[in-house]
Amino acid sequence: MVKTEKILWKKKYITVLMLSLLILAAVLYGIRNDRRNDNGGNILAGASPDTSALQMYYFDGETVVVRTLYDSGTEKEVIKKINVIPLLAAEEDALSQMEPPFYGFWISGQDGFDISVAASGGVWLKNDGAVYYGDTDLSVLWEQMEGKDEDTWNVLNFPNAGRLSAYHTIFLLKADEQTAESPEGLTMTVEDIGTSGITVRIANNSGEEFSYGEYFSLQKQIDGQWYTIPVRADNVGFQDIAHILPDGESASETYNLDLYGTLEPGIYRLVVETLFAEFLVGHGRMAGFDSN
Image (cartoon, rainbow, N blue to C red; front, side, top):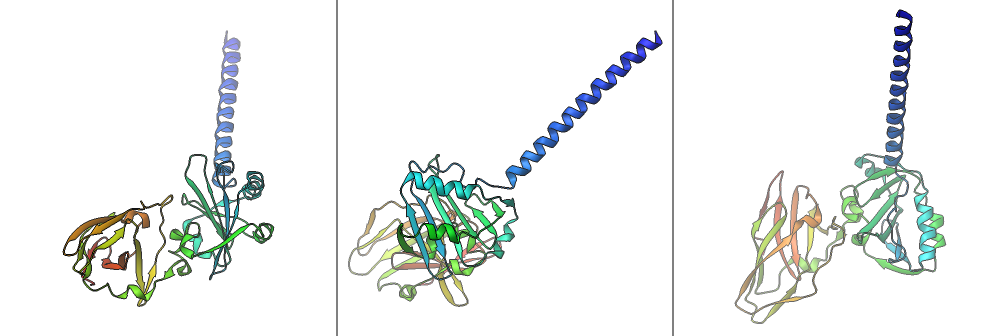
């Protein structure tokens, strides 16, 4: 009887041990796979070359050059070359290690949303905020795309310029001095300002109609110089319509500041057509003041 109980206990012990080992193996397998996924690779996963062009960017610190592919077969070859590059998850402060030249990629995803990537100095940045370490010597690929549809753009259009501008001022565009003064009889003043939007009043006493659109931009003053800052949001667009403001009238308009992410402390100004309104961003608060 005792011998039988010992045998049963031994079998039960072995069964429990085997189950424990299986559970441990499953946990280790899951951890390994999670770590592998966190390490990146397939950074252009979800791209849709069959329905979207693929753009590659090159920024030497002064000029942004863009080359565009429209042939889906060629796009797939380039995407495959990018996706096989091993990547290791990194913290956001790794972005400070990036330096010219910068490379970038843009393509629409299968879900209809943008996929944009920037790479430089051994660091990769995706528009979902993910940062990775990995090989960023893409000079050969850039040369292979020579002769493709090529254009020159300003730095505000470089992939993920909004996030990069927090670490590299070369992603800010020096503002034209023509915005230093508003046209005579036209003013724009801050009525209300919050964490996500700014409301201004546009007044027209110019003697004629004034028209303005939905588009606006945001500038920041750095060492006495105004710079236009890039947006951080993806898929940004504005309705192509005109608002007509008769002489002697005014209108209130609200603009979405969420496009620019969290604003660092400093002096900013909203620019609408030839008008501007300055406001101050402090630590946890924002306030407008008369700049016209």
